[in-house]
Structures are given as structure tokens and as C-alpha cells.
Length: 106
Length: 342
Image (cartoon, rainbow over all chains, first blue to last red; front, side, top):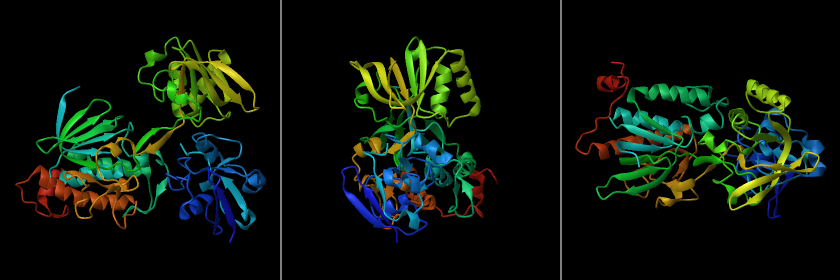
């Protein structure tokens, strides 16, 4: 299964195995990775599963869709590599993905 | 302090579970007042996902958050609940006579026989932008909502954001302000197209400024902001004179004052028993996403069930001498009269 590394705001890495087809948000919640709130449960409706995609993985994860861009307007401390983790779907191509978690979600 | 409202029951939160509680309580002749910090009913269904489908409401293969809210409002209409929107319950204390004083930040004061906390994920509060030191200006020259438009007359106003709130207030305050600047991170707006067009026309006329970037610093003293440092998308810094700043970054859920009401809490949730859904304080109940008990599932349908059981107990508090007869809406003439269908 593809591996995802979440780096918490304090620098602690959390490495989890993720099933293909699930979202990066779901795997964070399932593995109790701190700092991902996902208030709306993955409906792309709240911007509280915000992560920074590691530069090396930006091309592989792609650009946000317009709906996600709209929600990112409401994310805390936005950067060019900001994504909503509920909108990144795990695939074999993302094996090794690294994302960082912001200081807070709102 | 305005007049005191004597109530059978005050429900904290007008989300789907708070709304359905009005129905279950209404069948047992308990009249309800509902308080919600949002300006509309529906809670998360209305604020987070009005257009998104819900698939697990019994009897509805698919329904939107807005659709569910509208149906619940129609269902509870016979019981004439009183809504108090745009306010948050700040204080809840027991009175010597056993009832409760319930006070809101809009100075509404209830005396209630029972209180039902159906506050979901807590109260929706504005998101604070990541600007160092912004707290010192909040409530003095940085505001997250507009209470009085006059407070912006003749001021250098900076509005930050790209949603409906940011755009609506841009149009409303532009005629009053000495100068108005709208700042958004990108040249795309998530707002009504007509409003966006009107804003762009004002910019073209030179009647206001539009800038793309983010606020990275504030200048000012004693709570009065003087300028905002804005970093644009090419990493250049601009100093924007601003005596009033309005950030509109949406809402987030916080537990809020509930933590101060002397209730036992379990990881920011309110433990209840599964017979009465009563909290550690007799007469205070908790239903929906905000409560906790072994096996709890945060589902709307669980909240509906909790509302039905809670209502039995609350009716005994409101009518201590009345015998409760368990009845079905399908067959009971007395219930049908209450619903206005018999």
C-alpha cells in the first residue's frame, strides 16, 4: 500500500499506509494524526483539513479544482503549496507522499 | 437588560437536532425557544453544506442540507418555536427555584424549566487570519462582523477576503468610507456574480482599490490600527493605510462558553446517560453531535432518537403532575390536533 508521511507542526512525522482510492484526509483521521480537523467530513466545505504538499510532490498531486480553490480562501496561513487533504486521492503514483500540517486549521 | 422571557425549554443550537427536538417536545406540549449564533436555522447543514447531499436520513435516499432544514422547519411549524438568531448563550446558571437563568451575548435573558444543549460542534466563530499581534486590535479597529455601519464612516477601510461577506460589505461600506480597499489572495471571487461586477465597476471608476495578496503585518498603537502591511503574490510588500480592518475568512467551530457552565466534559463533549440524555446537571440535557456516551455515533439520525427520549423526561419536568401517555402521530387524535391535521 502507498505510504504517506504527515509532518505535524511540531516536526513529528507520522507515517501511515493508505489504501488506494482513499483520501489523504481520511488516512490522517483514521490514524489520529494531530492537526487535521476535517469538520465537514470530507465534503470540501470547511477548509479544516488544510496541508502543505512537499515541493517534490506538487506536480504529482496536481492543482486544486475550482471548488477547492474557493474553499482554500478560508484556510489559515495559505501558501502556494496549500491543498485540502480531502481532495487528494491516494494512488500508487503518490507512494511516499509528504505533507506538512499548518500551525492550526482556523 | 431587556425583559425576561419565561420558557418551558431553551434549546441551545438550531441545527437539525435542535429543530427536531422542537417537534418531539411540542407533541408533549413543551414550548421551545431556540438560540443560535448563526443568522439562520440549520446549523452545519446550513452553514457548511447547504447544497451537499446527505444519504443517511431515514426515508430520504438523498437530501441536501438546505432541503433537510426546510423540511424540519415545515415539520415543527405547528409548535411555533421562537428563534433567537445571531446570538450565543454565554451564561447558564441554576436558580434557587430550580429553574435556569440563560443569558446571551445579545442580552436576551430566559428563565427556563429545562435547557437542551444541541450545539453540534460548538458555536461558529470567525476565523482569525494569521497576522502577528492582530488580537490587540480586535474589537477596537479590527472587526469580524459589522454591527453598526456608522462606525466605518470617514475611515480608511480594508476588507480582506473573497466571499459573499467580503463583497457585500465592500459595496455597503464603500459610499461611507474615506477610502476602501478590498484585498483578496487571487483574482477570483466566490460571491454572487452581480456583486463582483459592481465591485469591479467601482474599481474601474477609481472609487475603491482592489489588491491581491495577504496581510502579513499591522501597524498601530493602543488598539488603533494605522496601516496594514500587505505582501502581494510577487512577494512585494505594500503599506496600505487602514483605520478599520474587516477580515472575512469564514467561520470555524469552537466549543465556546459551554466549557464554563460547570458541566462535566469528555474531550470537549458533554457526557450524558442514554435513557434521559441528561448531563451531570439535572435539568440540563444534551443531544446531537455535542454529547457523548459509549457507542456514540455523530449522525443526525442518532440526534433525532436522542431528542425523542429527552422530550419524555423534559415533559415530566414541565408538567410534573401530568401522566404521559405514549401515543403515535398516525393514530392519536390528540397529537393530530397539536399538529393541526385533525
